Image (cartoon, rainbow, N blue to C red; front, side, top):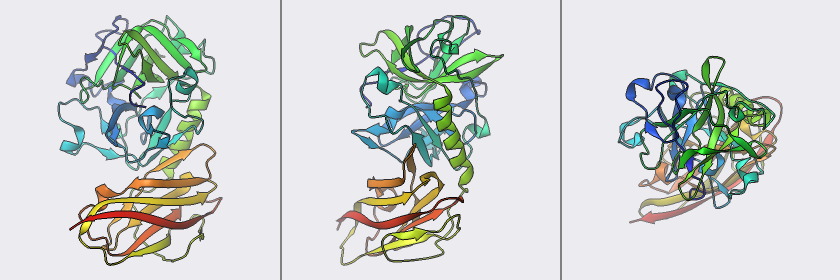
Length: 377
């Protein structure tokens, strides 16, 4: 996943119509202007990529291969706004948790053009990203008449290269055209690609402003000129619409547990503030937690309506991020790592998995769950 894609970086521009093909660091004074203001870092699970806050202040558009590895959709990612520093963002408290993301279930990784056509995700968060600012967008259902395919439209790519991972870079502006490769996966042969920029915004200067027109998803493995983008069309915009609804549905913080139950296959109340809770008890475990992972499934016709929370015997509660596929009818947590939340604590006592549905219309059920724990004396 992280090895097959080379992401694109574009050069900081001195004018809309300059022509550059190599990455350049964006000066700090530009970070408050578009398109840099809404471009940021997405990181977690040892991986880092780029993203753009577009169309809504609580969603960030990026690429699927950043959050997909070895056939598994990963969760637990953070966002850093318009970062421009040699320090890792989480060292200075710059990160904001991303609540979850929407993706196409037909994506399965790999380097085929048909996979890059699906290499697109939209994250959603509790809090406003980029200070509440968001980029405009431009889309077209034709892969030959898209703004990215036109030589009369200036373009720019913004993101964070692997060689300079915590400093925003840009390439552009340039007027070289992208050409259709497969569906809305487009290829530009005259722009320098490189590792680390995956998920960065590909912008078009449209109607007097820079608007997000696509996501940078690939480059040349040999380091030569060439870069691929997943261009925005109505299908991509549908994922953005789902993510907007998810962002608007969720409150800012989790409420305390207000109900409890101890069986499997419990019905989840529709549009309720109360939690449906399943429990398991850990006994006679010496030492403190070294590693802890969760296996659980929640069945629901509209899983984006849900909040899922794990609570330790000591009362520490952690909301779990969601990865929701279009058409999915369950949320699955398979080997989900909880170590960052509970490492070093006592495992003994009653653990709770709590679920609630925050929107009307459909209901579901929650089954039992399994914790896998190792301890240190």
